[in-house]
Amino acid sequence: MNPSQIAIALWTLVVKEIKRFTRIWPQTLLPPSITMTMYFIIFGNLIGSRIGEMDGYSYMDFIVPGLIMMSVITNSYSNVASSFFSNKFQRSVEEMMVSPMPNWVILAGFVLGGMARGLGVGIIVTGVSLFFTRIEVAHPLLTILVVVLTAALFAIGGFINALLGKKFDDISIIPTFVLTPLTYLGGVFYSISLLPAFWQGASMLNPILYMVNVFRFGFLGVSDIPVGWALAAIMGFIVALFTLALWMLENGKGIRS
Amino acid sequence: MAEPALSIRGLTKVYGNGFQALKGIDLDVQQGDFYALLGPNGAGKSTTLGVVCSLVQKTAGKVKIFGIDIDEDFARAKYHLGVVPQEFNFNQFENVLDIVLAQAGYYGMSRREALPRAESLLRDLSLWDKRKGSARMLSGGMKRRLMIARALMHRPRLLILDEPTAGVDIELRRSMWDYMRRINREEGTTIILTTHYLEEAESLCRHVGIINQGEIVRNTSVRELLAELDTETFLFDLAAPLAHVPKIEGFEVKRVDDNQLSVMVHRGQRLNDVFEVLGREGVQVMSMRNRANRLEEMFVSMVEKGNAQQRNGQKGGSKEFRG
Image (tube, rainbow over all chains, first blue to last red; front, side, top):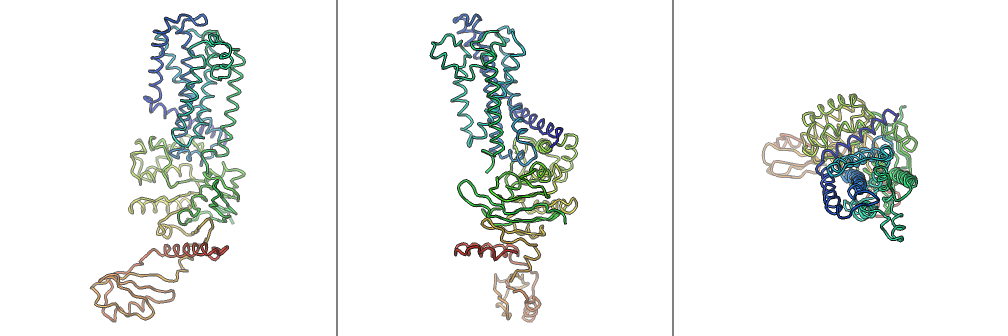
């Protein structure tokens, strides 16, 4: 395919993915906004007012970046996992496999679709948060960069999960038993400086901690860990997972007999 | 001579569980041909076509599509290929027009180029009025036609149809046959068809390959294959009930019911002899037809012979059927 044909194929796939999640918006866009509103009311307003300050900021201001990031992570991941797995399940993935589209275009199309949903939900949650607090962004470019990279990373993760999944249960195991605990323990609701030394060390093994912290740094200008390290870690994960996903596609893992 | 539309050499497929689905098959389908690939369930038809379409990974062998080796440039080979699989494989929640336009997009066709093509195909296949409806609301026959429209969007030179008329009513099947004949004749599209309706293969195809237990046991023209039939059974519908079954020397005659006779005719025998005896005995024939599809008789006989030889452990026994 020449570059113009590749651009058309990629655009087709991305538009198709965006149409998919917007068509079923009560399942994809509405629930995170409701859930996050509950978090803001309960943790931010009711409990937060008793907690006081965290790292020098009101508790509401402290948790807003974490909650936005949590929505982006969950939605980027689950969009690609469920969409690609449905394509496998309904065998409509064959439409793409018999076409001359390069595998990297298929992967990129789904990842961009997942990022669109993750970032879309992130914008909605940010909008909701404005009802509860006044947001000031200390480093806008860094904030955008981190959220985009994180959405990409988890969208690729969702793709790998869908490739490996054999039944619908398989695409809910990772979000339920891995992503959610890591996100909750990734400093969304607290600063790791509150933890004993051992648990601070253990927390450093959690990749989501780096993303939440750099994102918070973008918003508030405070972070528990060095920003450069965190960015390097995110980019390293993206390169590694993209390479793995592409290798799996090239070798037909989970899609070719 | 032009490159074959499809050329397969030594194609072997061994699945992960050790099952050898294809045992080194060779096959050529010439450009412009209408070719039937026949075989019982599990014979290797879908595996063969799966390799050609990139849905199945081959273990060994060479596949060329219009001379392009799929190991060297599969993407370019895929431009020539349109696939209509056996099972519905589109997103049932998308609308009809989106499904065909997305397919065009995957081949790099711009929307401006794809829209008129989609309209033409959907009109030809009587789906234009349904273009804005969800695909899941279509009837089974409409879904089949949608898959044909989708496969033709990028104007493939080789169209692979895996049981395209399975579960389709007779009227629709006939109209699909007409459509397939038209694109083969007028646009020169090479068509490879698998089907369980041997009448379909006999009616549509010029050449036929029979695959059994992972081997091509016959690859010839439909005409040549039918010429090898040793016997045919004809049914005679009679004007009045029979008093007794007439004896016709050299022919096996049986009563089917009071108003119907079956007559087995061997190669070289003349039907005139049958009519002569029936006329002499005052039996009036209103109409006459083959009892079974001729190709079906041939196919069943070949597969049964092949299976029997396999059971008897005759090494390479199926080679007897090679053309």
